[in-house]
Length: 93
Image (cartoon, rainbow, N blue to C red; front, side):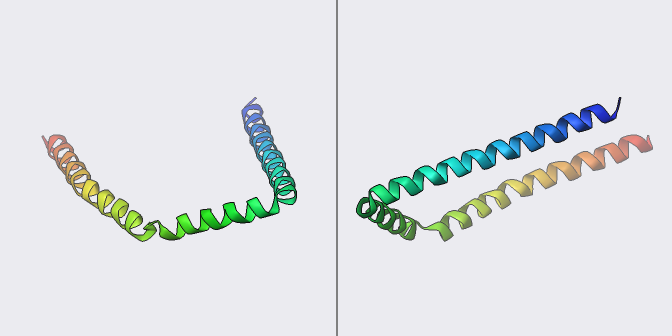
C-alpha cells in the first residue's frame, strides 16, 4: 500500500513533464510558423528585444538584489542565533 502513492506521484510527474514538453513543442511550432510567414517583422521584433535587453542594467539589478538579500539576512541570522541561545539556556534550567 505504501508503493501506491509513490507510483501516483511518479505518474503525476511524468504527466507533468509530458504536458510541458508538448506545450513547449506547440509553442515552438507556432513561433516557427509565424517567423516563416512574417520574416521581416520577426527580425525587427528580435532586434528590438535584443536592444532592450542590451540596455537593461542587468548587473546592477542582480547586485541590488544580492545587497538587499544580505541586508535582510543579517538580522535573520541574529534572530536565529538569539533563539538558539534562548533555547539552550532554557534547557539548562
